[in-house]
Length: 367
Image (tube, rainbow, N blue to C red; front, side, top):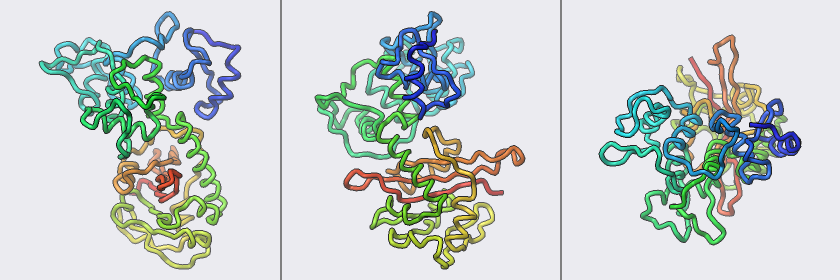
């Protein structure tokens, strides 16, 4: 593998939103910066999710096998890769991917074939790729896709609808999806990178920039500016705990009420302390200090995967079609990171297709 020095400056400039500037960007001998999925491949390589071959190549045009697909998804999800029995006649415990295959089956990400076969060397199609990613990662419900070659009774129809709506899967210019076309290593990398890092989707990158602007407004206590991102009909809901948001619903402020958020002297019941069950009854200004902005949240360069998946599971129970931008405070060594906190901006699209902020859900560990 070699570093293409003549292209490094351009790649770093274009990819700075996804990788730390301290990391060098290494491209494979057969993947140049001009490749349409070069950044996605570089990102997955930096994250340790994909590997190349010993001769320094990535072989982007080679088809993806079921075993390789499961291994890449397994690394992205940190699944157990301990070699072990899989129960499949064609995947022994000595198979280098047996751990990932066993784990993926346990998680319901992939299934075998009749008579206990897994077919690890069979190639993966576009439809199969989308179905696996749909099972592996959370994607909210979405309108039915309108691809000309996708019927409603196709096994991957709903998965294609969800991933296409989110921008993870894309069709062709003639409005086809081509579900039975085999996926290359480069194409699979693009699918997977978008699934775990939505910043690769231009629309989601714009949403991330919007969320960073909202975070700056919150830090500056400019709730009149926050109000510009809020629906006139739905308002903005605040919840101190993700689970409590389901139980008590938090407190909702209308768009007109938000500019005076910090001056509002009303004591609201925001919810209940997680653990003790004591009431959280505070003025908005005190809630701001005690829960909303109680941690040091910094602007995000990437979406990244949540470290507290239960938080997002709770939020999606209440807002099934939402997209979440999470700001995470990892806690301190003094308390063994048990003092972690998160601020989750919950967005939904309105009828015009514009993102609107509908909730800000905080979360933390409480003893």
